Length: 165
Image (tube, rainbow, N blue to C red; front, side, top):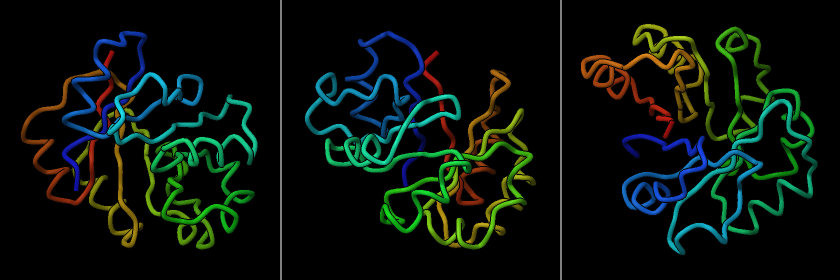
């Protein structure tokens, strides 16, 4: 299990090389260019709700080296069953966590939950709901997360998404 995912959400290319040595990278779909990455970089592509993406784009990202593609729930029904489940991660906002059909939860290997704050109890409940999936948590508040909260999140089996901005 990785310590964290590094969300490369700014244009500072000087961060990519050092980050790729210590954590898997999470690249927004618009910036998913493997030519700008170190050859051994581990990365996933984050497709947002407002991105215009089709099946060919997802396959291209995976063929070009992305380990996984993180997709919104709206796209998941189209891609589950077409793309291997170990290559798909479901993107959920905190409000949508309980509204995931069994077909979707079994058709992905992980979920990335965006939440306004990192609450260890909430993370534990998500971990119980998605028992067979890796859980990634991204705080949307921009507030610092305390070391004790980080330890509790890790103890529940989840992985934090840390933005570079």
